[in-house]
Amino acid sequence: MNFTGLVPSVFYKNLNDGIQLFVDCLEFTIVHKDLHPSQPYAVLRKGNLSIMVFQDEQLAMEHYPELRLVTNDIDEVYAKVSVSHPQWLHPNLKVVTKRPWGAKEFAIADGQVGIRFQQW
Image (cartoon, rainbow, N blue to C red; front, side, top):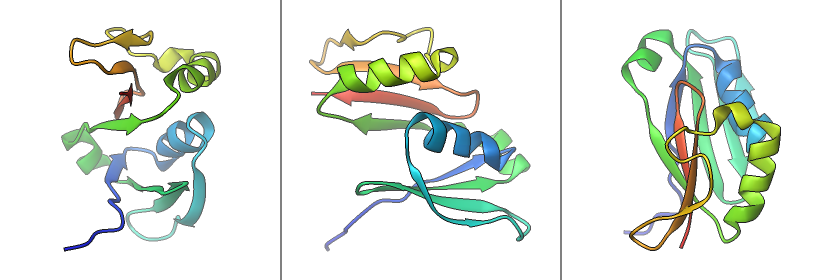
């Protein structure tokens, strides 16, 4: 089997919250957005990464995903995110920290989704 990507689906009560996190904070690009179906959604992309964010209040209340984004320059990511959206820094991992398993990590959470940034 050969796969060329993995595209997670994340559910928000309000689609704009997901766009704020992934587009405004993490600099993804909206490649498609449909606000008219019963479940509005957007397809977001950054390099080889893609994610779909959906507006669905019921599913948003049932799912609280944690995603990991691996980077080669965690200090650059932290510098940008900690200045642009410091309110989202997770209180348990709000600075870049070398973890016992050897990775450097920090995390953010927007109340719906947690994202752990990791550099090996």
